[in-house]
Length: 330
Image (cartoon, rainbow, N blue to C red; front, side, top):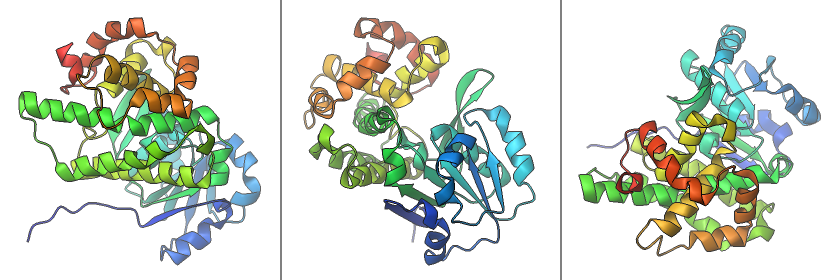
């Protein structure tokens, strides 16, 4: 008998007001660790101190996040710990903990303070190295705890960024199909189905639902399933297409005009779908959905690029990664 064996999280818990219940959530999931290290930002710890201190940590490590240079300091503080690393913060904190946990071969769980992209559950860490953003392959977390009360306190733009990043899976899947038809690139259909299904539930909501438990659950669920699709696939092909190449090109070649990753991805996705796909996405109208969610206004406010500059970015985007997308046909 032949199967693909993949790592899935041992604990996934979502809900309101659960940040102070980490110890119990681990216990009921039969996860026992003699030591637990909390890694977070000092400001974030001060905001949620009362909830966090209802749990027992052997050490609290404060980080800035987002930069490889910080890894050696974190690993030095955690090298004698034989236990669990707990990352609490935004994508920059989660990614540096992923990177360190992978280097030290230690288990870790993610507790995101925002749902701005699929960093909450993925096998990739995006970190600054020598002044440029780079991607590092890592092991996924053993668990994920999402407190909706914490997410609701995050900037609204970050929730929008998470929505845009997740919905862009549809663009990535279209590029994968294009690569199959043009270059006979094989498609992992299980990964394809997971990626697509991670997005679909979001289309029934409107801007008024943005902070509801129901919507935040669907967004969290979608980001987890999206991350799982990457693990099944073995690459980011299943969630990252032309729209991500454009965003990465902005970060790498025009850092002074860089903005929030998910919003840049959404900006590129909407333009590509409307102007360059032959039929757009026949099943889902991305432009209409962005307007219904209020994403169009948020993108216009925060992305520092105009549509008439899009084609200037294409040559840079093609250089970012050897991945066939619709950009290769422009």
